[in-house]
Length: 81
Length: 368
Image 1 (cartoon, rainbow over the protein chains, first blue to last red):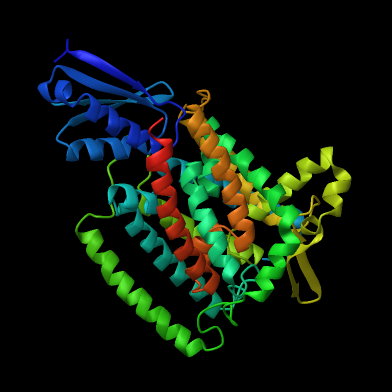
Image 2: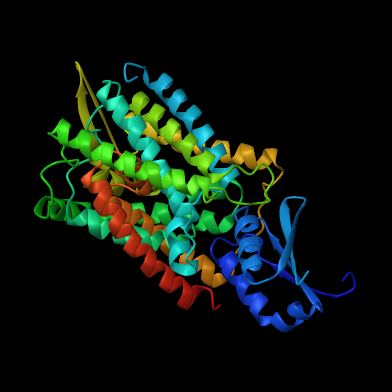
């Protein structure tokens, strides 16, 4: 799904648990697109614990995640796989 | 030990603080998340890891007490009163709104997070606010004392030993089961991430060394109040000097021929050399670690609603800690393993506060 739509969510500088709650809300808002594989959600975060909580919660909802470090922050890509 | 000169004491406390800052940053260990995530998401992993901390610290502290290495009860713990509960409740709400406890706020601010920086300003403001009402709160502390002893079975070593043995045995079996099922391991992708169970083992050891070095388990918020008093004395020297809180020793005990004492007043004393140095060390340790992983960066202000609640949360953290006579560092990490009444009452109240804070967060902060 290289050419699918990328929904970007920038939560840099935000604190927990707002980080996780905002990500979960965004996943739910775009549920149809994400489930169809028409889009993936790209989360930008500098909050280290989010690299634990978001993949864990997304997996419970049936999504796949990929985390990579981009300079001083992390990018979490959430998709249907 | 306490025979050390102030400068050696401060250097050692600073060194321990640097190690604490490194551990906390790498594991992003959050004592708010362990309760809050249970209420919000029914996640219990961090709570299990906290149980591991309490067991290891209880073993180390009580071994130290039995061997005569550690003062018992430590001079920074006292009998519990209704203010322990009231303060714990306020503190619990504050730590959810602030997005971190007094430690989380410090090490995340050190890594450049402005939301935590705003919460830290709230802590300083809350400390100054408390100084205005200190005489009234002190009177309530005296009227509403709940216990005659500082710790459970304080004067009955046999009963205390039995209680501890039961807790360590029961808790040990529980932790052993969690370990076998892999429930103490988490998966995280941050660079240099340290498993939380390793963080708490390190914290228990460092708190033990700090206790042996300074005579008390770790505390941090009196040092924050001291900083607030020091900064305020630049602008309002006469007013700060006139406040009873900044003229009162919060800790004082006799060690042989020497009286060791200190308080929130803006001068160099035992609190500055122990807690102050520890706080400085945690800040530097977290900052150095963030720089090492090239993660130090200031990203700008959070959404306005988060900023307002972080400031309010910081004020509540300071007010709660001052009313209760300590914060979660002193009571969760030091009081509970020593079976101190203040630790038990404060923890119960802070958990209720956390629940209330989580509800406020869910309803009012996240929607915006």
